[in-house]
Length: 209
Image (cartoon, rainbow, N blue to C red; front, top):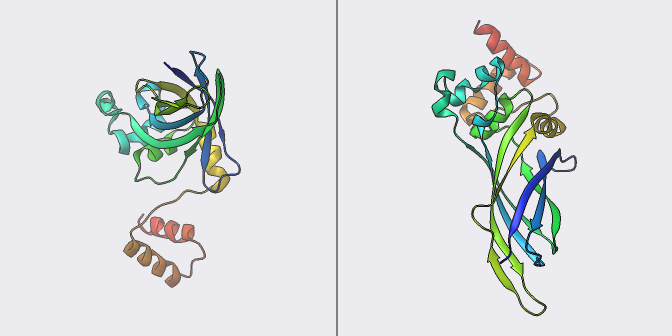
């Protein structure tokens, strides 16, 4: 029976992607010596917040997500980050492939809010695998599912996530507004003859005291 083992060995910000993306380098080992013709792999990527420490600034930034620190024993639950699909070409023994992990400033997604709150250190990831393995002798094909228990842990450097975001949004972040709110803000900016959105929001914050 074909058996695969997975290890995440590296992560880099993709400088050529159209949107912020991290390439996770995944090493795949077939442990029985069976040649693999193709592997259709699906990977669920989760963040496991309980597996790292947080400084005071990070605690403050994460209060909106997890509540008061006294409750973190109950609220630090896994966060869903992404589902990634990738085909691995034929190999025998060991091969390596890249998984494209999308990044975003969408703060309506808890995982992205969590990533933004971290200052340094690493993001504890858990990769859960499933999919289909195609093997067989010449002229035949055997189809085997990836065992449901297959997983891998990885400590993703926060600096890699920040690099991926800075490549596309240098020195900036995004805020999604309801259209009516945006229209009101736009009218305010025009009336006040303000050149940028930053100036409009700074003026409003100052007026608010």
